[in-house]
Structures are given as C-alpha cells and as structure tokens.
Image (cartoon, rainbow, N blue to C red; front, side, top):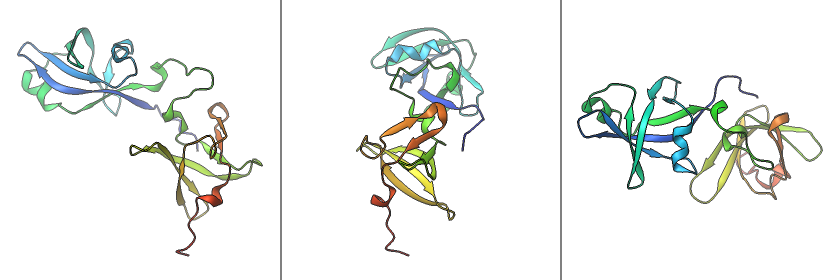
Length: 176
C-alpha cells in the first residue's frame, strides 16, 4: 500500500509569541536543533505555510524567530502547541543502512520466503522502543511487532517492503 500523497514530517512546534513585536518562540524536534531552519517555510499538517523564518536566535532550548508572516501577539499565542511540518521531499536523503521512520508506513510486509503478510499501518513508540502496527489477513486484523533486527531482519523501502521473521510469534488466537 504505497501512499502517493505528499507526506509531511513534524520538525517542531510553536510555543507562542515572544514580546509584542511579532516574534515567535518555537521548539525544534530535529536531531540538530538548528536544522529546522534549513527546510524553508514551516507548514501545518495540511501543507499551508505557518511560519517562514527570516532570522532566529537561540534561547534556553528554544528559538526566538522573526517570521516573514505578520501576526499579532494574540495570533501567535493562539497557535501555541501547533506542530510545524516540512514536506518529506525537503529532507536530506537517508544515509546508507538508515531510513526515516515515516517511510515505513504503508510498506508491504513479507515472510522470509517473500509471501505477502500485510502492510505497516503505523510506527508507534510509547517509550520502550518502536513498534510496527501491521494489518494482515482478509479481516483487517492488526498485530504489534517490536521493531528489532530479530523480528524485522530486512528492510527495503526502495522496493516498498520489509521482511517479518515469524508473525506466528506475535499472534494471539485465543479469542477466536
């Protein structure tokens, strides 16, 4: 199940206004916090421009940004908590043997012999590590699989699939 629509990746959030001159505070979620300013305009989840940084300065684990957009202090404060996105195609290519977690959503799931199991619905993380939510079977059943090398020995996002070593380890058929 390949997704053809544009993917947007969360890179930060708005923390509200800074002062009364139209500056805004934001928090970066990128590995290198200043990299958030390398992607151009920062967007909403639907792709509309929310913030186009003109200049920035660091401030206690956040940034104070002078935006191109003119909004009042109250307008910026009303956007507090709003996530900031960039289009996936604006991000640099993943390194060899690496990938973006977002690129896993929608990939086909195969068994070691190449047989179709299902596809990845979501990548979840509740603090103890990444989990792949896999939809399989005709009834749309779902199972959570730990995202480990033992369970997922091969990943090939270029060809739209991953390999799951043994789905039977994770199925609970007791309710059937």
